[in-house]
Amino acid sequence: CIFTLTALEPASAAGQYTARGQFIFHGVTRELVFPVTIAEAGQGRRTIDGAARIDTRDFQLPPIRRFFLFGVDPVVVVKLHIIAAPPPR
Image (cartoon, rainbow, N blue to C red; front, top):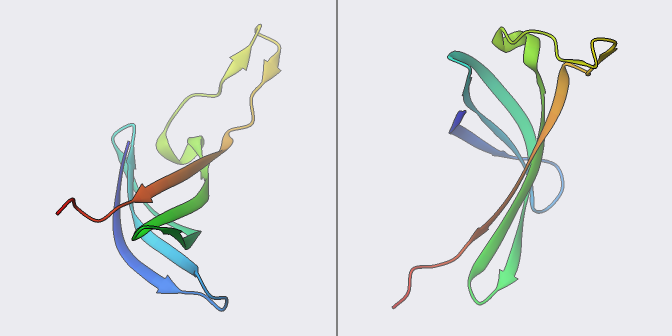
């Protein structure tokens, strides 16, 4: 999968943002919008945390079955945790 960030909009609380971009999965592109938190991590580093709900049916994936009896929820949560650091001097 590939996610390309196209906008990062401030939300109502400090450090809260709305990420918007194009998500390509299984050859299908959809717009994806989800909340992220950006926080100071010391020594010039920042952490970026977020979670996006994705419905696998939107990407033409077949239903997932376990043991031919139990279905798996087609809505999954993709979580991200990024640590950004300034380049070394």
